[in-house]
Image (cartoon, rainbow, N blue to C red; front, side, top):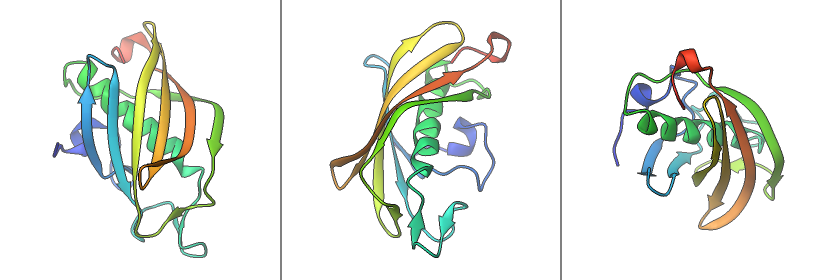
Length: 144
């Protein structure tokens, strides 16, 4: 699913961290994206030859942002605010240079302004990170 992420996310490079939108399933309320760790990523740390595992929360938030774009009928993306995460569980020391990670987000709750996503990151098909991500988008900025 080749899509222009600059059109989908309300970010400008280099802040778009994910590389590819893999799938959007509005019926099942899921979205999948991918990120390839390279030295040109803004959060890349050459001292660890990768990215901090905390970058995973932003991978998850941007993946959820892709879902919001399609749920809102592919209108201009609106800014959402990452409220935080419950139980960010991570089993890796870093996102390794040269590896590709898959991010899966499933919407689990939504009202007019608050949305929760259960999110997972996979390394070679094995879950390495999971969290519940909570996002807020004011009504006047569009429905998430």
